[in-house]
Length: 383
Image (cartoon, rainbow, N blue to C red; front, side, top):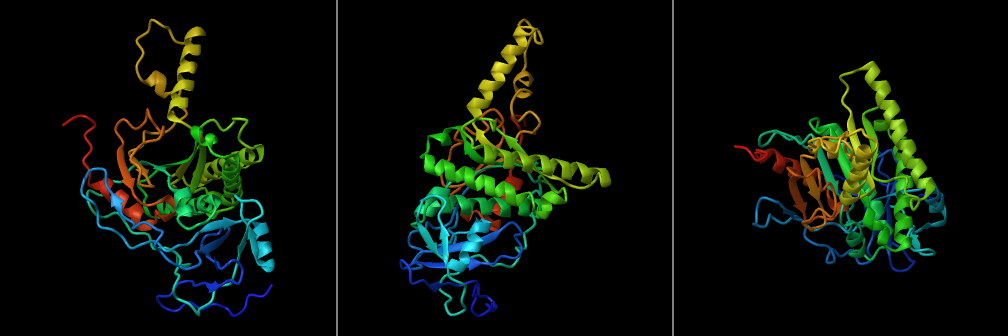
């Protein structure tokens, strides 16, 4: 395998791409050393134009005025690559997960062009949350919307957007774990009960990415060291979910729990961030299964039908019974709705809607959302 000249980063310069002779597209590889979970492959549209992308802006739920627009995003894809994709670099191709038979040309980075910049391979310096009241949400949940639209705007297969979204999940977890100590729980809405209505090829690609994510992330040092505990929410036993993907996700869950338990025995004060992956989850489905369990408990005599029931009888039978209600819900993608997510749990959650697509929700956007939350005064219906 020939790598050509070794790339050197100039001050203020990021990775660049060189034109590819195949299909008029330019492809680049970002050898991000800090990630530790897989090679990052970046794809750039042939003309390098940002015209197809939307201006990046934040729409805050408490204000009707438009927020200052942010610079346009660069047209790139950040995604995990499988070992097979790494091996195929020598042959100059990476096969798309979404479109069978399509090829993506890969070229090594070159310092000759500075037009198309992608994310720096240097580690992020995550900002602190000293502004405002300084209060952070104990539980923050993300509706990770916009992956498909992100890839459509770049004329890429939808799987490229989902791969970029998986890369963003890792970045968000790393940021919360390292720089926002007040956040103890993070829930990511990865796959809804309604997502099974999508084309089978896209659903298969999504679960393939989840399987790959689970396999790679359980080797991440945050999981091995017991700093991150992964839990699954939803009907993961649904037979429509591929067994290989289910097995990898369950293994990630069990290994992270074991590592966290071992760490707590050594140091009880050690902070653990709990990551909840909502897969085949729907708020209505959760309420339905909780109601069925309550009805069965009444039939079995565990709960008297004549007893005065309060909301705790429902809450303790939900998939989220072991979690505190989310303090902050962040939805990307520009839509202002919950989409059947945490319908019971969001009674007093702060809702934050961002126009950014999920793959573009970077460290600055995360800090803006958390600062916005810290500036709010929560009264829960009181004075």
